[in-house]
Image (cartoon, rainbow, N blue to C red; front, side, top):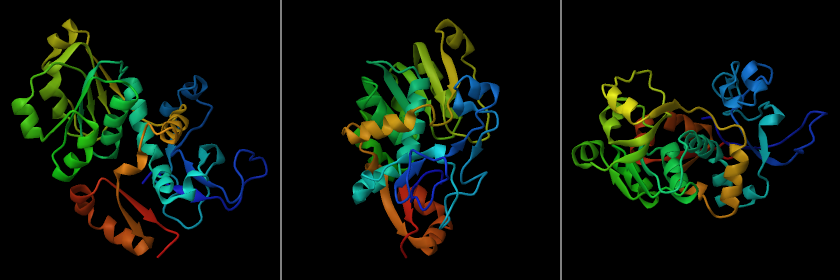
Length: 284
């Protein structure tokens, strides 16, 4: 995974914002700060970005070396189990927040979200409670995840139900499932000045036959990547003020590397029976 919390053992001689024994959560995109995009402050699109846990070791270890700039002090939150779970979920919530920003959401919008994984559920929460969407509809093939997202949306559908029954005009489509044909199949539902946000990576293309509808209605499509540029601070503030119940997406906590290994060897167990699974590596 990209996200988690850790206790600080030691800090570098020039680190001032976090101290040993603090509990921190951390951004997972390591940026260069020197490319032309970083110089413009657009860190999510850093040309030399590396992902912690994928391109740099960092997350499933007992002791790891993390650049201090990535860290956010969550020591007070980590004093309770609820707060600890919440702190472990800031990264996907930050990704959802950036997606909502890129969708140019405004009060009264109607939104369709494809996919009810952690980022999809957080997108629904944010659309309703922070960006003041009028109606939010979620499309998800897995029954467990449909039930998980239900409290945060106006209606939830399986793909079959949605494409056979849904006919309202909507202002925003957030594609977070990776099934890219969702975009082409739902594109004509988009209202004038509608927006499409692409979140999930699947390596597949989009075939769009509604180009005239897109031109006539000034519909825009944008990719959305990342959780930088202040999203972590915003998410933590929203959680601490009761606006965003981060911990509610956690459906299981496994103990130790053995249980974690067993879970990773059975990915269907995560998909079919869980939303967000955390691993405690300080126990077991």
